[in-house]
Length: 240
Image (cartoon, rainbow, N blue to C red; front, side, top):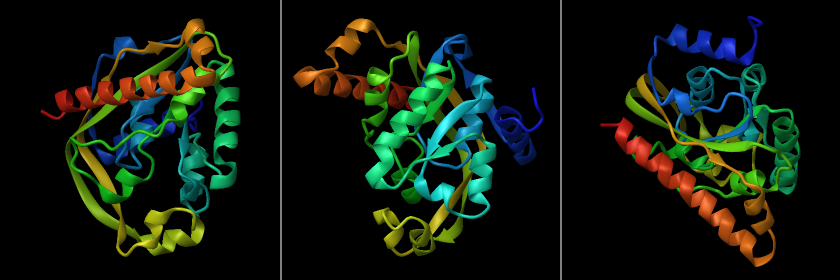
């Protein structure tokens, strides 16, 4: 493995920070197939943490501004992340890039809560609603043996500091409403964290057949709810 690979960089970063990480249910991670990793989100450390935990490079979709801010864009590029486009092109670009990666049996990662928990830093046992884009991707992608893998990041101890003014970030991404409020973007650093892997949800041909017409909304909603509730349960287990 190259010393500058996303996986190696992730391991070095977490090691340098002295973070204590405990992994549960590692045996649930599929080894020889494309996987769509779905997780809760509260820190910039989540992407390298998940890569290190499941021992596999993951191509994460990240917020648009992360590809615009100097230094940060270099970091996310090194980690193999692909920043989302502006809202008008976001969905089409996300689907195109993610499907190409999944078709080559790679792992793609998403944080369906979006920007909200990164800015507002809810209690470590709480999760926001999930956006449904990942479910559309899983059902739409023409990929055999695709597994949706729910993973919970359960923080035991962390510190929070102020990173940058939110209004400064609005210069790089004016489309994000959260960046137009007063205050600072928090920087959450983990000291001790549990990573709990849920059971993979394999996408079947019959489910893809249902992804059309009026049935599509129902099956997308079911998959979104399944992942959200699974991660919520794992999160509660890991935080106590």
